[in-house]
Length: 300
Ligand SMILES: C[S@@+](CC[C@H](N)C(=O)[O-])C[C@H]1O[C@@H](n2cnc3c(N)ncnc32)[C@H](O)[C@@H]1O
Image (cartoon, rainbow, N blue to C red; front, side, top):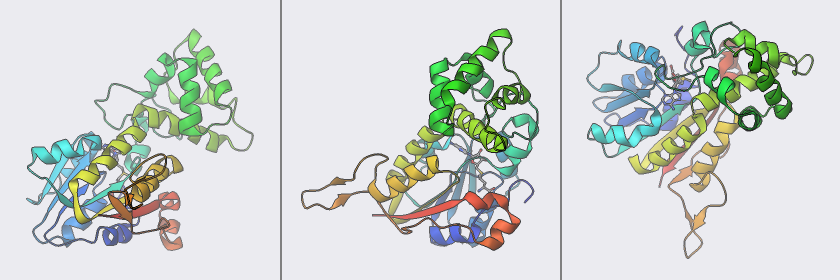
């Protein structure tokens, strides 16, 4: 539990509508809170837990259960790995997006504004791109785009310019180096929120989070059998929007395709019209649950 307290555990399990003998995928194993609960409810059945993080693999190694297999890879390779393990269709897929508390609390991972550390932010420790690379090698234009699109930073252009000017003398190496520049542009009294927006932007870029999400969602349409469930929990609107659009329209942008008779051509139908949110009791004991939005869809 100290690795990560699972959010809306009960709601996720209900969303998956577990069949005791079913085959399930947890795309974001993390500390395995959701995975363990799924395994407890399966009789027979199988569970695949995906995560790209070495630390998550260590957690997964503690599970000695022949029904469980950990897959250390980016979840954008969902279909490829299921095929490798001889699985064509599954009964449900769960994704609890973003970073774990463990990743945030480990200073050296560089995800948190609370510590000073090297500018890293890679979920996959073998990944080639780190926040250091992004900040020191990207053009001003690209930094502007990332800060604006992924962090919804208001004065993204000004900040991008200042970052590029700052790195001329010496590269930005640490979180404190970054914060020193960022804090100059933060609205007074809202420094923390501003830093969080910048960190979110960098994290999304370093881990290519939005593209990986879109790719994985598209593959769920191929691997979940009719009647099976897709359950996704997200923590900010840049993730929730594609999930919502995909579940409702089978697309991330634009209107749903329709057949000759005007019926929507979409792989899923949403089970939850509005996203499910954590109750006040849960938020009181787990602050991370505060921003969680859970959406559930059923495969047509
Ligand atoms: C919020 S945590 C999941 C916590 C988990 N549900 C639990 O109860 O412990 C998200 C996890 O997903 C992993 N992750 C995020 N994006 C990923 C991706 N594209 N591919 C593989 N793993 C990813 C992160 O490394 C992190 O460990």
